[in-house]
Image 1 (cartoon, helix red, strand yellow):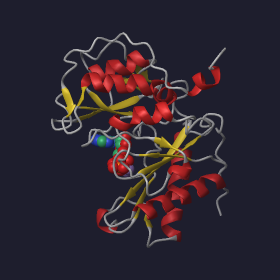
Image 2: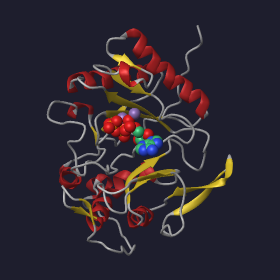
Image 3: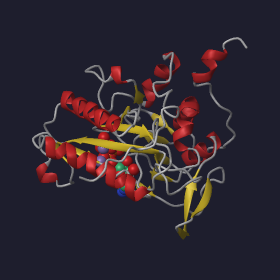
Image 4: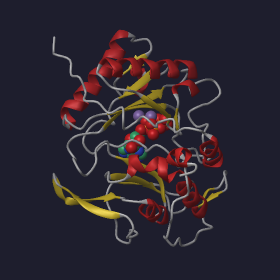
Length: 302
Ligand code: ATP
Ligand code: MN
Ligand code: MN
């Protein structure tokens, strides 16, 4: 088939059928992004984003009046949620109905519900207890340079490699970076979280002038918080390609390690420039993500 090689990675707009009410409602006033514009953006990135949001419990940051209005961080379904998104019972907590999506229409159903940010779990509903990815969230404190944040990302990459994991990096769309690794779903949440805590504590112990691993704000000036708390059951991190409810309509953008330079910043990629980037890129920066999946190699306790 002609063009098949490109078609594999190309962000071909997927089919959509969800009817948006108030498509002209402005969600990001400074960037001029409307509800319809948000739906168009997600339609363009869908094929790249899907593996990170389909069949995973989702938390949403919802803002019916846009980023300047009240925002709700919502972990469960609500009355009136669009039926293209689905509800599933958490097997460990049958009282709770978690939100999942199965396709682009599911995501557009969430856009209809004013979801401005999409935050998945690190496990799927096929195996709730066993994460298939881990995420170290780098939160630079005041006064930390971009170079030092980049250096921290490489240090996490190195430490991931020591436990058999391949690191991928994305901008957060906010102030930092997320270093993410695919994991073979074998170990359960408590063991995985303990291992990510050990990684963060190790960085803080080895270079205490650079890194902290506990959320004590006062200790953070000039240091980078190695936030491992994205790695517990029910914890979430913003999805690759998700928009952020922050000025400028930034998105959390997967990048190549080589792109991690002065040319970009944590909120460099936005709804306005993402589609062109994706249309122009010859390869998905995270194309190896699922193929690189490996079990975590747990170190023996000394
Ligand atoms: P930044 O680069 O600015 O740090 P970030 O997405 O990493 O962006 P953090 O504050 O470091 O933001 O991480 C917050 C994470 O915690 C979110 O990704 C989200 O999944 C989760 N979270 C839990 N509760 C909330 C809440 N009430 N509001 C927002 N996020 C929440
Ligand atoms: Mn962060
Ligand atoms: Mn954080």
